[in-house]
Length: 378
Image (cartoon, rainbow, N blue to C red; front, side):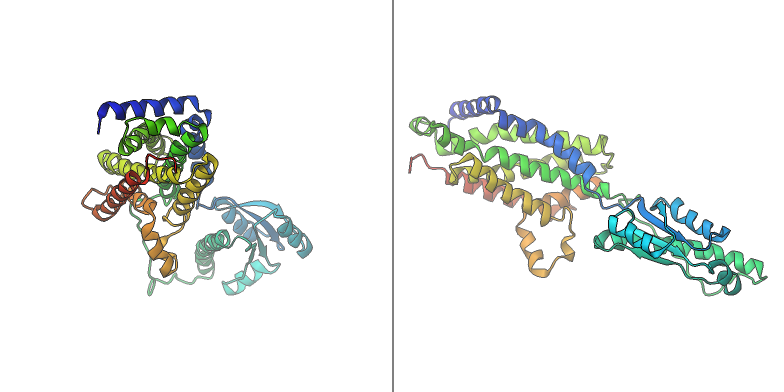
C-alpha cells in the first residue's frame, strides 16, 4: 500500500465533498439541525398537563384542592366547565387532557367523615402520557389527602396516628433530577453520527458511477484497499468533528453532566464512526445510484438506531426475540457506553463488554468493506 496514492485519493475525495453542495449540507447543517430538533423535541417528561376543572361546590376546600393541582407544576388549569356537555366538548376538541370533578357535597362529606371522593377523567388516546398523568394525579391527591386528614383530626380532637406508619424515602442515583433529557441527549449523539456518517459515505462509490469517472479510477494503479481508506479518511475526520460538536453541545448546551473520562468517549466514538462509515461504504459499493444508496443507508442506520438500540425504548421491555435481535444493532453498544460515561462516570473496565462488542463490529465491517470493492466494470 502506497501512502502517496492513499493521500492522493483522500485529497480527491475532499475536493469532491467541497464541490458537492449536498455533501456539505449533510456534513455541516444536518448535525446542527438534528441536535436542535431531537434535543428539544424528544422528551419523556410530562409537564403542564392541561386540565379542565368542574368544581360543582365552589367552596374554600374545593378551591384549595384545585390550587394544589395547579401548583404542582404537573398540571395547568386551562378551563372551567360546569356541565357534562361542556366537559365532553372540551375533551373532544383536545382543549384539555383531563378533567377534575369536585362534587357538590365535597366539603360536607369530608367534614362529616374525614374522607371524600374526587373524580378525574383523562383522555387515553395517548396511553403513555395518560399513565404518567394518572400517576401525577395520584401523587397530588395523596399529598392533599394527608394534609386534609391532619386538619380534620385536629379539628375533631383526634390525635394523629403514630403507630404502623411506613415512610418511603426514595433516593435516585446518576440522574438525581429525573430529567429525561439526561437520558435522551446522549442517544441523540449516536443517532446523528450514524445517520450523517452512513449518508455521506453511501455516496462515495455511487458518485463515481453516476459521474462516469469510475473508468478513470479503475485505470489508475491505486489498489482497492487504498480506494477504501482514501475515500473514508476525509469522512472519518468529518465524523470526529461532528462528534466533538455533538458531545460539546451535550455538555455545554443541554447541560448533561459528564462524569466519566473524555478519553473513553473519544476512543469509543472513533470505533462507532468506523462502523457507520464502513456500512455506508458497503452500500455505496453495491448500489450504483446515489439516491438508492442514500435511501438504503438511511434504512440501515436510522431505523435500528432509533428503534432497537435502547435510544427511546427500553430493551429489557421488548419481546425476547427482539431483545436477541438487538444484539446485532451496533448503536446499542455505543448508546450504552455514552449513557454510562456521562451519567455514571463508568471506566473502561466497567464497559469492557460493550466496548469489545463495538470493536469486533468495527473490525468486521472494515474487513468486509475492504473486500467488497473490485477494480472492474462488471
